[in-house]
Image 1 (cartoon, rainbow over the protein chains, first blue to last red):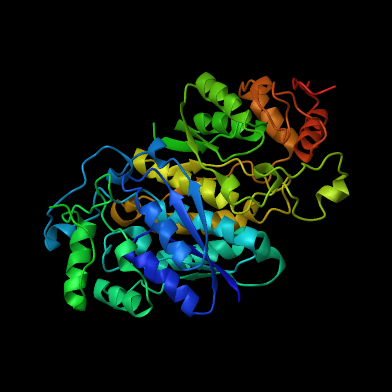
Image 2: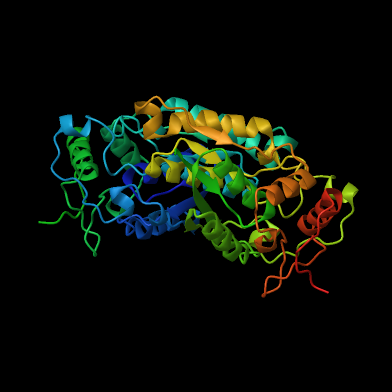
Length: 227
Length: 227
């Protein structure tokens, strides 16, 4: 089986992504980045999910708190109880500057050390319509870059591919697919601001989208929310 | 003065780059990445050089040892005493997979938090002719990506520029320019395998290119080499 690097945050989307990579016939190598995110308890979820999927799992530490610029990597408050209009009004403070460029860059390095030509990334352009680095043209530009950036790209003629199968899916479609592929959704974490024991706030943008997704999918939500 | 992010390794090239960015009228924000490089004593040089240049200096930690794949981020031996033919024969084991993609990605994030539209990077395509991510087309592709990747690229219409002024310079030209601009070259480190006190080995590819550069420039080499 060809190897593939799967960026695994520990959330619902990337857990489904990991199952999709396996279903597509790849041997997945899960990669998580500890970038100083306030919800870093998601990394424990990632470890559990990778283990259940039988995937090698690496965690690379990157201290993005050194440059700040986001509520996820600073002590700024995570917005809560926002309406759909507010969520769609612009790029929120939970956007992390250049995060997807950086994550994909590290995944590219890992792919090169593995001799892998495939990277799976669970970006979604519906949930994050305002994020510049969740647009299809961003991923196309990254694939162009990747095919110039590596030793493999100068030597063996293989094309590196960036797979973003979830890009245009609704949250309900992601949940249904994860459910169908046997993902243990109770082990995933979406919340930007969980408590120390991993319970979700239920009020940040990520929680609201998740809750609405389970409702639309008509499936029970196994998430533990704060009362 | 417009702000610019300057990637500063602590080597000769990036020290000259920092002086060039200032000479070009930018307020430089120096950024160093502690990526687990075995020659991480270069980070102390970077701090000294930034201070002398009056630049803000940030160090971001990134544990690339987690993915390995290079003599610079593993315990593999650094090649010594290679001939020019050997150096030009292919991509050496000191190549770090996707390193420049990752470094530029972090610089892009820092630029976005600063509101800067200019990134200076001291890549050189003569010394590193075999490195895929030192080619002009790589930097052009990164600039295309950067202009899709950030909040600024969707909002304020400013173009992000990647400056690589040293790309086609000889080492002698870099040394002469650094000297002319007042860089304290004795505070720079090029060696891939220095001892604990910062003395250079004199035998790795980087040392050999540096020694030859000073000879070609006709300037004294202030570097402390191991006997």
